[in-house]
Image (tube, rainbow, N blue to C red; front, side, top):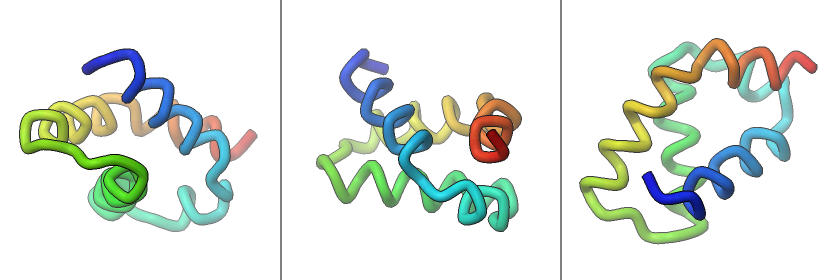
Length: 68
């Protein structure tokens, strides 16, 4: 994943309401985050697949940030 997409993703996580993130199950959270990123920029299929894997591997961290 390119650095710009990573920065954009983590900025989105930090700006999102924690209760929204915490209210979603893992699958819904991944889908919602990808939809949010896609709304800000076009993602090709490779970027979408990479982002999906990246988010799934970082779900505990995303939820920790949302609680904080």
